[in-house]
View 1 (tube, rainbow, N blue to C red):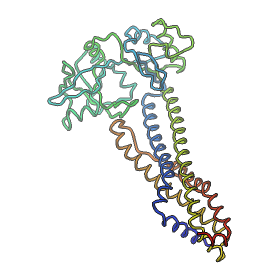
View 2 (cartoon, rainbow, N blue to C red; view 1 turned 30 degrees about the vertical axis):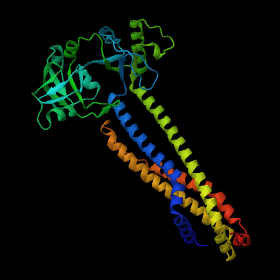
View 3 (cartoon, rainbow, N blue to C red; view 1 turned 135 degrees about the vertical axis):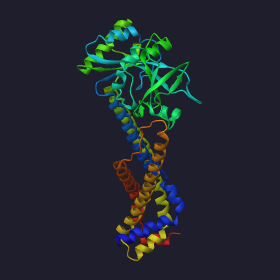
View 4 (cartoon, rainbow, N blue to C red; view 1 turned 90 degrees about the vertical axis):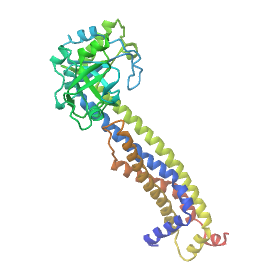
Length: 408
């Protein structure tokens, strides 16, 4: 029997029972679609996180007040444990440099009739260097602005768009809380930084934020290591524990009242997230393909039973065991491949929709599809068709022609 005849016969067998074929392919569609979708989302998120890590630099560290919850994001449960005295002693360490403290200002931001609540950061000039922030127009904050506690502000792109639209903001006065600030510059677009929109920020001098808030503590600080990174990391933790009277010989982060994060640790977190995502994809795909494969095997057995007379007639007319085996095996593989194609298209479509929505929350999120994941999905679909289709195909091929012709 010619290959094209086998293929045509298999397609005809699928087309005769369209509804049943679609239900049979459902598990395959879900399994393959899950692989493509999760691979796309994983690749996109990996790009976002790597971009955020690279923006910090290979020698960067960030220190927060509070306690580590043991999770990958280290959520704080305390907010006043990082003091100005801590900052002064950290600045004396020889293993770190470029310490840039940050104080948040809360309150309504307004200009004309526009009101909102973008993030307002009180920063020193070196903060911009640590975060790779460059001016798009005007200038950034300098030491004179900070030392003189000048009421000036630098706006990120989203703030400019919201409050000024196409109007040039330089020289305009924007109100933050109860005080007015003169806009001296705007920044380049940064997108998301650790799942926060860095383009929805206003920067004012650190000393101004300190005076306005009256805070005796810092919200966080960024810094760079000057020598070996591990040495700098240990020096920071040792100093903070000594100052806060923390006995922590086993280096248990839950005992500290501060959190230190590095770009290297962020890379490790990315690796663990990627591993977890891979295991999740594998589990979902395996379960879906198993269910789909069992469904295909059962439906193919039903199909063999329904077509027993046809099989007997074909054998009586000279069809060989191999021809019958190949026909039903081809039908099984075609079912999984068609289901795989639908799953790939569905997975790509949903990934595209997710990318469109995610850009509103993570501006650096991008749509990505891995060709490898698509190829892997089709290979898994074909393997499922062969693995679960071989038993019904062998059963059909083993039917005796006379007994098959007598079957009603």
